[in-house]
Length: 152
Image (cartoon, rainbow, N blue to C red; front, top):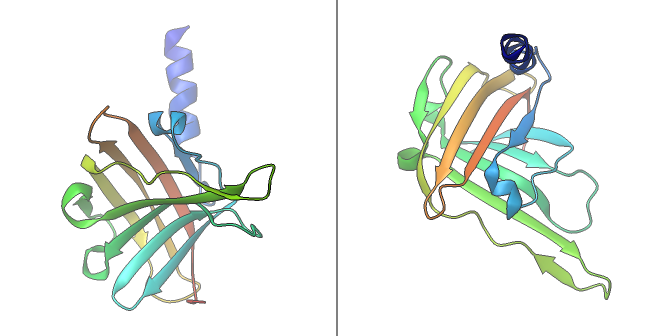
């Protein structure tokens, strides 16, 4: 029975294009919900953003910013040395006040791997990452597969 469950989980993890996921033990302290993944090239940096669209207040569950020279298909990048991992999530309370969640802790270690790394709007960027944070050792795991959008 465990073998079938493991096989089913592998099948889910290997789903095709358009699969964008975000999970990990950091969810106990940070909201990880999002509606879309947005990838933008900003000057010489690639920004991978897990965002809630149409939100009046800032709702970005996670953002990874990578030096453009490292965004190459098939490359595995050490996150703790070269990737900025951020959390921008604010919502309103019952009194209408802005309530911001704390940022992610500092990164202890992790990897980011690109399976596709398009450079122009409309081209695909896909890959996955795993981060372990300092302190409690919380994790953040994600997959992304989307098109590059023009900078707003």
